[in-house]
Length: 358
Image (tube, rainbow, N blue to C red; front, side, top):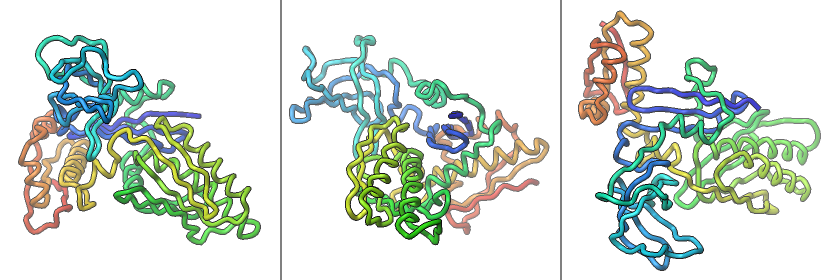
């Protein structure tokens, strides 16, 4: 198996893709706006115990940034000497997700001095991904045939084609993520039962990839095309279990039902891509749109270093850029030189932007 890590470092965010045999299986995004605002996985803090919850057998630790960290005690119970107000060093093991703060674990790092404060920051995103996949080759995305933007579009799409025919329809809800397997006109050799079994085995592999790619967590229900034969259903269940095995997240797969439905639970290791990229209304957030505009500006500037560029953008995008929350002008100036300007267009819809020259 050929495994590669492709890195794209743009003004405003870093994107890292892990590809197996040319297909992207993981996507990770880190935004400049969150530096110092969120506790990143791998960072070590001198925290201060805010509360101890005996029912949860855990403590909540003030990290000095973002939401308090959740510190589970485990089977051994509360560590000796740990009390509310105590200072202790902890390492972030899972980033915050909507409705829950980050998870932390006690470390043997220094535990004296003012708290809360950062002791050691997390490694850069690409290094963290490479650390988890040590046999992978790490390269800049533009030196590979990996299209990170295309992979991201796929990961945010409601429908995904299944290799060989058929499609998946992926619907996140408040309670779970539903994945429906649709034949979509797929044909094959043999009778309807064999066609359904072949489709479902292919769908199991693609569903496993999409779950990992999108960073989905919690309960996921996959509704396969109906199969009467019990052995065929068991074959699909085994195909799904084999397909999720390379995923580092803990996954429990329940037996397939007589109706062809499989429920699985995937450990939440962080926000899904949709939670990062979209707002509460399910639209690309203003920051997502603004960073896309900056990416276009940088790309156009690199393709022709003689032109003066004008980024025209909607009122919402322009206002976000004017806020300078990430000092993007200074960074863009270092990459392109002082040859760009931003012009708001109040009549444009919120998602519209364009780059031209003058």
